[in-house]
Image (tube, rainbow, N blue to C red; front, side, top):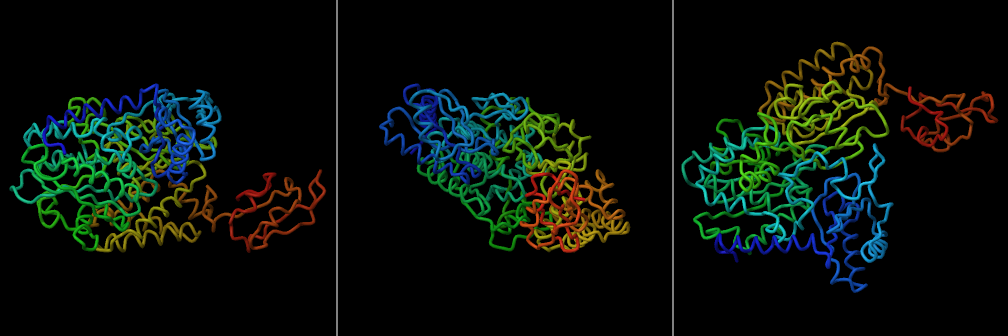
Length: 626
């Protein structure tokens, strides 16, 4: 039990020394195994267990210690292991590699070259994380400790700076804490970008009494995994941020709202709460002060609309997750009608840095109106898929090409969708745009929670808009008619267009509906639902015209507007396409191409279901989309 500030400082010093020794000890080396969700799905837990087993079997316990850490970030190359103090990194590790790693690397200091990362552009090998282009422009602020500490061990968290921000906050008045956050320019990382300090000031200004801090962990954007990675990789930081917020506004309780689809995050938050209660860092009279704070956990059932803060509050209260009219705002009447602040995971994860390092250091990063860093889930058709934290102001080009390694398979960059399903598509003309809240909005997109999905020349932008509208239509809570009806009608029109039945009048109707839904919906879901349509119609109007007028999909994605054809000159008549066709729609012709012995094949388009199997099995490039 830590009873005072002096005892906590002594404990922090002890664990800092222990953590430094773990990473730098030449006598007992540390093997860190990524235990983020992506690597766990690729058996990193089994890799860890096998490492521990082999180390024990060979009597090497006194020389090596294997343990988990949070997400290293470079998801497309995982599972990773990092060997300290050398900081040697192996990528794509399998359970079957463990014995070789122990025998060659741990015992004989030999490097296994096939497990070393090779840059897809420069072809250079990288033996450490800081040698990889993926990491060179990253700065870890919100992700402090993620990929470094064992997220299930509070001692390692304390040794890496945990609760030093809270210590400083408790030495200040609540107003001074709010002023520090205001000075930092920290804006909400959940999408809206509202100044965090202003939100806290509203709640602090309310009369003393029952108040709440709520952590929005209901991350539901397709392709987004920023919040889950932070909750999994350093849950102590998010709890600390919640406690600092609680002290600043005079709250006594904090609630985590995390979707149940994040079982690893839920388990680690529960474990962190348990350990912190045992230490007395959660509970009554924390560190001998008058500040008392308890932390609770609620699980969401996966409703996307519960990412909207008032719908989230309803869900915590046991009601249907539907947004409330505002005002009153949650800072005045929030959870159970008490003043409440709702911050997302990344925002609360950044707060300890602001208090620990100071607002003056935080504002050295970022742009004039968007300070600090932002975490992105970089995904889609990009070589380096993963979790990225970069200073605000970095350009989209740097994100896609310097960090992301460019577009896969040498294809041309076409667009990047930022801000999730409610964001917009930005084109090659926008690549040199500095990333911040205002610039992205000005370009017809938004920061959102940090999803960034790269698309190439093979993507149909009408189909992309339809995909996001389908998602939003399903996730609309139905409370207000502009969103409930508007999203449904927009999806119907997009489906009509991709089926080859659209008209120019449909395009006009689509734009009118998009504007009406955007202007009249109750909450942020409906107000931003039309962004994918409006941005793609603005940037790629020629594709919409091609679908409507020419009845063609330029990207050959929309099934009703394309067909598979066989080039009779390239076809050698092997019949592999016919053998693999599930509907038996491929037949022989009477034509034998010059230099070939067998008749070429032919696809009956009237029966073809466009599954693409024929193209995938043809080794001669004779099958193509038309």
